Image (cartoon, rainbow, N blue to C red; front, side, top):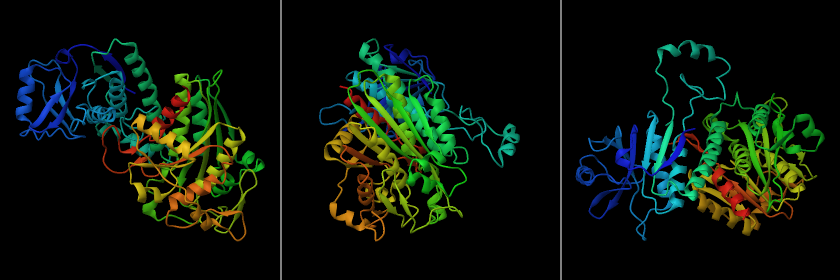
Length: 516
């Protein structure tokens, strides 16, 4: 990850490869803000804006010659849009503008970011955005330097043999300076330290989501969780397929039985002294989802390596909480399985028993995420936490309802509100959704306590109602991140193509709020 420092130096004198300043739309055209550049440079840039196609719109990044009076190699203009009604820019606007600029500068080594910060909170947002934008996943590309390792399987040797004929793949920006008058303040320094931990957690989540499923299967995920927790004080325990079967974890066992690579349930425990609260996080970790016997169409499987994004978010949220020393006890549950069709796979009409004894008629094996999550929720509730939050790439219906950038949250009213507030503070988009009681009737089974699917219309809400059956009286919220977890479109703001790391920032903000 990029190294980030604070500095109060004059932006015009920053000797870096690129200096980032802001542009914003005005009634008269475009204005340059945040860089404290020489007046003649600002005047010339604002006059040339139409010719340079600079509009100041969000996500717009333009490189222009720095000129003799600016020491940086190139000047980078990043769009902020229009000022808000108070004449300022929101923290998320600054976060996205910084991220968009740094993301576009992947081939550049050193960058200075000079955006308008009204206070230390704005400095924190700029630092977060810059670090989130400084991301590249190059594990499987020639010139890649990911620590996770090399590709495996057929073709790996060929790729290595041909690497001498190909250009190295650009990585991410290595060094970032945030230029601000607040640089020497204790609050700003603390904010940057937190931003580094947060960005590392998001990057770690993205790396996991981007990893090929032949390399990241349940046992490999569990091993990686143990390795990642070393030195953090987080304890890790793992139940393998035999322990799951003997422990009554029927959801994980049933979903995983179609694969030659068995399921796992990973428990992460962070136990600070005198915690202010006790929170359980449960993450869906389907390392690849073919749909099982109810197989998906080929087009529907292309991004299904990302079906473990919830578990990845839980892992790195727990580790981040430990690194920040939050006074909140956190348990994380990673529900890991690979959903494959085979002679041993579960069948439509099978009846399985979830941990705790509730039986489920499996009407569709592609509604598998809720089955592994049911086991995880029961296990989490057994520990008697104050609140349980689950996060999962659970339904295609979420994408239909809210698209690819807005996640859904359902559950107990107070916890749902808590999640929405945390998301707002973190800069992520979560929308509160209901759990209509009348939809629960569609999951009635003729042979079991409940069926794993119900009414197709409102399918996201039906899935939430199914999960609620396994939470008892514990306050609970369910986060459906099916669309926002994996970006198959164009990069935007600080969000790259591929794994996005969505949910980590919201979960961490929620834990921090509980720590007060």
